[in-house]
Length: 141
Figure 1 (cartoon, rainbow, N blue to C red):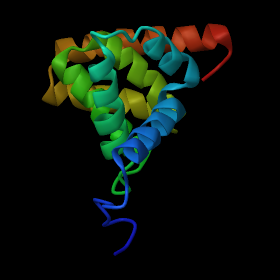
Figure 2 (figure 1 turned 30 degrees about the vertical axis):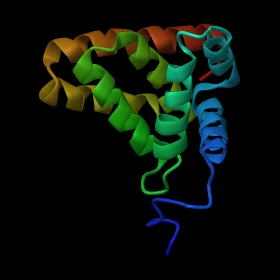
Figure 3 (figure 1 turned 180 degrees about the vertical axis):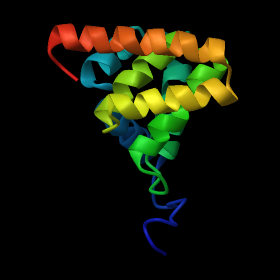
Figure 4 (figure 1 turned 90 degrees about the vertical axis):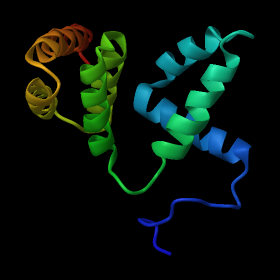
């Protein structure tokens, strides 16, 4: 079975999946973001943080079927479609980390204007501009 068609590795333990997820989460979102999220973990949020690390990051983001830039484009669209603006800002930064350009992010937002709504794209452009301005001020991208 090729790496591109592999979907399940029965030899992986739940801890392996979690560890892989944490590694990808740190690569995509950055250590500072993940450390802040983990610092806020308590009895109430622990199960949720484990769920997103294991399933979103360890099961989906580690799959070989799509490059990270494509996964980022899909994620940006989902955030725009559902109005998750704080998450959109985080994933704009992640998209840049994953290799998307600002022009590609612009194109995703333009595409979303047609399929999600013009008002949602309007907000998304403002969110992305804010992220870009913050990165420009910090001298990072």
